[in-house]
Image 1 (cartoon, helix red, strand yellow):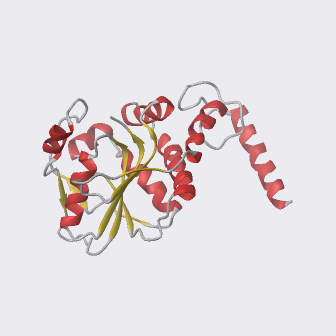
Image 2: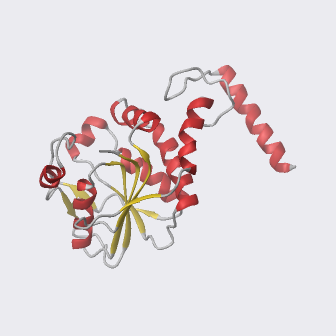
Amino acid sequence: MLRTIFTSTGNFYLTLLNLLYPQDCLICSNRIHEAKAARLCGPCNDRIMRYADTPHWSFTENGLAFDAAYHVAGYDDIVKRCICLMKYNGKQDLSKILGGLMSEYAEKNMSFNDIDMFVPVPLHPVKFRERQFNQSELIAGHLAKRFNKKLENKWVKRIRYTPQQAGLSREQRLRNIKGAFLVRQDADFTDKTVMLVDDVMATGATLHECAKTLKSAGAKKVFAFTLARGN
């Protein structure tokens, strides 16, 4: 009964806010008519959240430093649009929605019991100045909060500014990203199990190099969790 009252009250205020301050959907830009806390219209919200119920996807391959990588969706359709809008159009609010999707998926398909910390794949300082935020760090922050784990976003640095990986072969990507990461001297990854977080994994070259750096610093296991898997 109380839950019904609070839900109804919440919907009332959301509806009132939408009437007084109408908002457009972050993804399709259509006017939002529903009482929703997230800035998504009903159809876009439904298209996004359906991925939370998809089968568990994982990726492992010999020769890569991470122990396993998990992803929620393919890099296409509305997921690709969300990532591009967030990274290249500055729509940081989408990180809450995408982080929420990854959290919903993880609760149904994964276990973080043995994970000591979440570590976002860092951006090079030049790229960070251009974008003003690290989308992987924003997403990792939502995951860490949801699962009550440590977010460690200071211990790993990106020290080489590398060209875009898109269009390169796997071997070229591995060479391109080699030596790009550095662990700070005051970091403590000894015997830790780490979950690396990024927005997209293609060949796994970036995650491999980052995981290799973490294991060189003493990490026991390194897993990777990305929103999407691309080519």
